[in-house]
Each structure stands twice: as structure tokens, then as C-alpha cells.
Length: 171
Image (cartoon, rainbow, N blue to C red; front, side, top):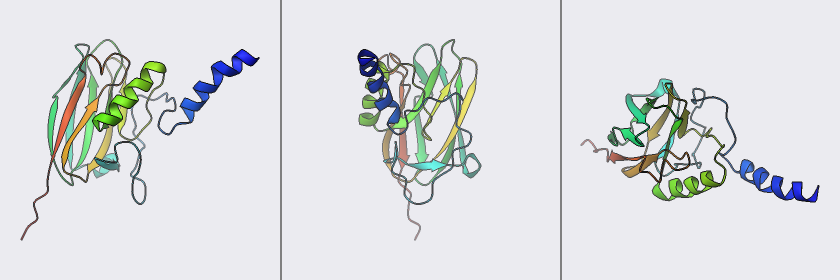
């Protein structure tokens, strides 16, 4: 019993971290922007949004060549984007928004716990041949990133860049 405790405790601790709970769905249809300021994953980019609030749709293909298409997306500050992630490969892929530091840290955790799936409003896991979607409001200008954090995928180069262009103030 003592050895079982040592094996179980790290798993329980990892699952208790926000955003690392196992999910059975392949997309996050039900996420809505929370009231007030969002402080979760990818908060540096903006905040989660309801799919119905989207002002723009961006379709992204994911493939077993460990690439996204397109790999670079330009968005205007303030836009709410509905991302449609289409897995054209034969293995599971995902799309996770975040800063480079967040994505690297999360990718390292995924190497330790490869069976975990994302249930965060800034991510979608997609089975082969399927499509997933989520929406995000980009409140801050700058360069941000997205990646597939399934073990080995990020390291193989499965990442992309989002450039959020500063909203011009009308005079």
C-alpha cells in the first residue's frame, strides 16, 4: 500500500492543476467567457469567448507531418475568432493557444503524463478525421503562439504564430 501511494500521489497532484483534467470530448463547444477578468491559461492573449460571439472564423488543418496550415495567422486586436481545427492525419492532434513559455512548460508536463487531454478554453484535442472548435477574444496586440502539445509533436515543430495587430484609434 505504501508503494501504491507513491505512484498515485504525483498523478493526483497533476490532475488537481487547473486545466489538466482529463476530458472525453474532442472539442470545447460549451466554453463561454467567464465574468470579469480572465486569469487562466493564455490570459496574455485575451480571454475565452462563446462560439456565437465570433466575428471571424479561422480554419486550421493539422497533419501527421507535424505542421499546422496555416502556421501564421494575423488577427486584429479586439477580434473574437472561432478556430476550427481539422485533423487531417491518422493520429490525434491538438491546438493550444499560449505564450511560448506556457507552451514549453505545458509540453514538458505532457511528456510526463501523455494520456492527459486538454479541457481548457484555449485548447482543443481532435481525433483523426475529426474537427474541433473554440473561440477566443484577442484583447492584446503582439505575437503569440499555438502548438500541439501531444508528446513529441511540439518538439517536432508542430507550432504556429498568431500576430495580433494593434487596433487603430479612430479620431
